[in-house]
Image (tube, rainbow, N blue to C red; front, side, top):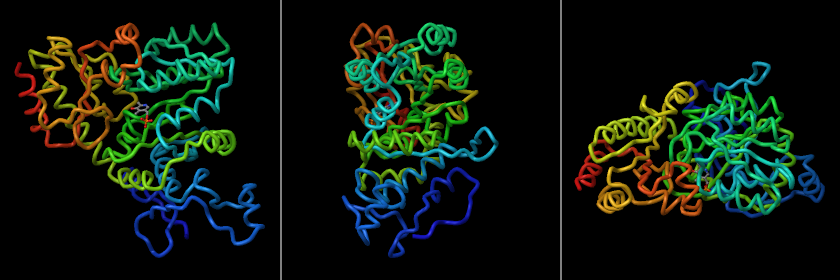
Length: 409
Ligand SMILES: *Cc1c(COP(=O)(O)O)cnc(C)c1O
């Protein structure tokens, strides 16, 4: 298992070649290492692997060669052209998890303890919102939910409450596509010694690299664009404090049982290879779909951060290379019109989740954000008629034709 020795320049080359391991038996693609445990040559070797003196695999809840290849690729993509404080290529460590929620649990549990608080934004992935406001709360960790688009509000909260230890940013945020200025919020957080984590699921490292903007941790639900084909659940946590990642974060990941599995990691590796070309097409299609929806008389408003009328447009221009592929919109007829529209769709898929090669359409108030509660939803801009679209890579004229026929009253 020799390491590769050449270097590459481009993003897609990293996506295809950044995994280090050359595999036994001359396998071209990373094999699915379906093995729960690994063989020690001697008792001595077993002891050394357990203590960490010798590198190598022990037990797949701890690590597995298929996971490792996916971790190396994601590390390369999240640090692509990112430098550390000394101008050297930034080093980070990724830990692959069974799901985004598992990676999020490692992130919060390894950084926070009872009595600590965290700060986040009110337009969040439904599962994150429930995890921080329900599960963390039971563990004695309070989540303060604010409007992080307002930097002054964030600063005032951090100033008055030194118990806030972590600031969690999701941008673009689900399902309103609101954008948060990662560099500005990170700078404020640093002033108050807070850790910054960024959920980069909607953007992917191809469009936005939070480590370059001040983040300490980057999180992905790999279920979405990184896998890209809707074939597996997964999550990843990356951190730039290598000691922390190798000790506490690794410990927590192992002990909460957050390990991925070899088949899902294999599927993720296949998806990662085409991330760049998929994202270019996703983004080009989303732009056309958003422009189409915006001029349609039955559409009351469109949330898409690539439209100059969107409040997050300037931030998107600053921190993303393209606006992404997530669009949400409200019909003039509100909830009833929305339900009618969703039921009339023919090609676009009625499903939650996002980031798949095909177009997925969902209704946040009754599906992904049902657990958030009606009053909070309204406060967060998740109106009952809001429809969320993850624009796929189909031929865009077919996506628009399907929307057209479904919008015809
Ligand atoms: C899906 C998602 C998650 C949760 O990830 P799972 O893989 O479903 O556990 C977290 N954040 C965002 C933005 C997501 O889209």
